[in-house]
Length: 260
Ligand code: T3D
Image (cartoon, rainbow, N blue to C red):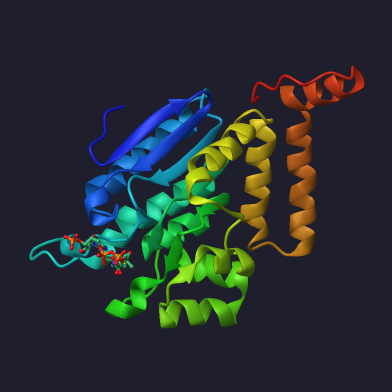
């Protein structure tokens, strides 16, 4: 795959997607968004890809929308940018039935922060930070921010972050429950990739169904969710990897999962 604004590498069963506009802190222009969308589509269809890893090139993860594109005369309307750039990315990250790990290597602002929060497991470098930069420029949080933040950390703290737009250090984000882990800067790449690689060796179908259950649990009531769990459990139990997992346990050996 040849891309201009991102780098994509297949590392075993992990697809690494690296945002690659470091001079402008990996901020988004529409073609970069389209490239990420294509990479996510590739990852969804290719059986060899069993986990994804998203990170940024240079000192930042992503500074959100490239503000010079957003104010271009005769450029697209802001609603078009949101509908074509961010909404499909967030939807694809949530709907791909493979784990998506995010390695936040530096500042994550605006849509960049909310993409990190939409991933399944997000690790950050000690020096990384998160900024809901929207309020500072008179916008509202997009990229699922108003959906995920209140659910992750409660309405009060989410509102404060979104309205005040203060820079939140990675350690604070961890304490609030916005992200999974903080690691020393020099270890971020290795540690986050290791999480993705571990996930890529696990039963992909079971993980995908787990993600489907989590997604639907965000809007289901308890009875709907219990029913869904029963249905998805049936589906998972028919997988090769379930049978292999049980067989390997009984034979006291390491299972060999195929992701099917
Ligand atoms: O279309 C729409 O607008 C709707 C979509 C909205 C989605 C959004 O994401 S809205 C939010 C957009 N993002 C921001 O408002 C963040 C703007 N950036 C910042 O606040 C700061 O840059 C950071 C807090 C992220 C980092 O600060 P710092 O001091 O580490 O770096 P810096 O010096 O500000 O930035 C370094 C360079 O990147 C600088 O360029 P230069 O001076 O070296 O030529 C700066 O202009 C550029 N840069 C940073 N962020 C953006 C950007 N260029 C364009 N767009 C950016 N968002």
